[in-house]
Image (tube, rainbow, N blue to C red; front, top):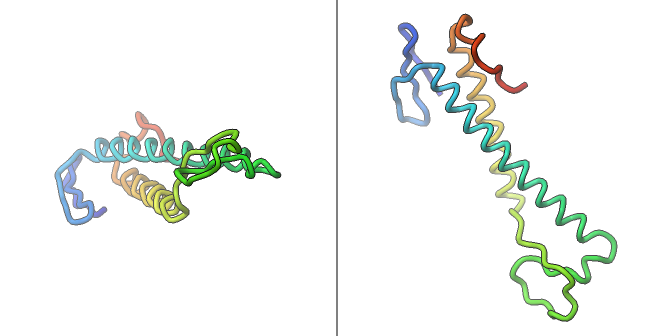
Amino acid sequence: MTSQSDGPIATYSFGGASATKDPIRVYLDLAHRWDATTRELDGLVSQLTRAAERLQGTAWRKARVGPFEFPAELAQYTIPAWPSAEDLGRKMAGWHDLKAELHRAWQLIPAEDRRQLKDPPL
């Protein structure tokens, strides 16, 4: 994200596209996206954790994972497919990118306007 400012309204460029927006609106939009991405990743991690717990010890012998064929009489439960390491890594990298963008957007908000906003995440 790059910006040019001549007052409270700035021109922002995100990946080549630019728009004139209020820096507070830009920050709030990024904060909303970051919160949504955090919730999505929390859900994926929870899904992976539950799946790992169900496979512990010898339990994996009676679990059906994803769409793979498995003798039905042996399967005591089915574990839905989970994201690949690449998909999870891509989402995690995007989360970190959003967090950095959020901090840059925060710096563009005048100090007196920051008091009414939630601080960016650490």
